Length: 245
Ligand SMILES: [Zn+2]
Image (cartoon, rainbow, N blue to C red; front, side, top):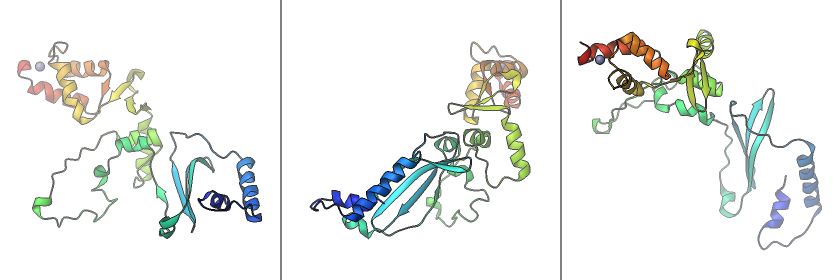
């Protein structure tokens, strides 16, 4: 739309206000004044990126769908010059997830699901094989649902319903997932990697006191941590504790 106006700004071009420029100016003025052009982002919704290209310019719009309407949040536009005019034009749609969703979704954690059948090339010679230890966070789906309203597309209806029901017991606050069911107290959901240190501090350390599994579990819940296998892990931990034998 603004092409004729941009061409006036190019170096070594004589400024000539043609009827085409006048028409472009009127169209642009109309587009900018008729409706609210940009809206602030809503971090709980998905972002969409729309791109478009003509022979002379490229543009991209960052948008979000709120209800039935798609609102623009930010846009960029660039007139192509010189060698840029030789760029090949692609017609693509990029579907991306909000940053918060990516905090917990790991590409590797999905690599062996039915999402990517046959995507793993096992023909590498041995020296190129790496041992990849993939730990899927137990709360990844809950966090994605609460942070970004994102449910794995391969979930069945029943799995979707269960996830939504389960999520009632959790809250996503400032990039952290909290378990809020027990006595309405907020307890941070911890990953498997953190559980050993928490058990160790709550059982062995001076403030631990080598209590039995049930009391150690309650202690951890009181401090404000939660994971689903907490009690089971506390039983295992206390059984292995030399001083408790
Ligand atoms: Zn002990």
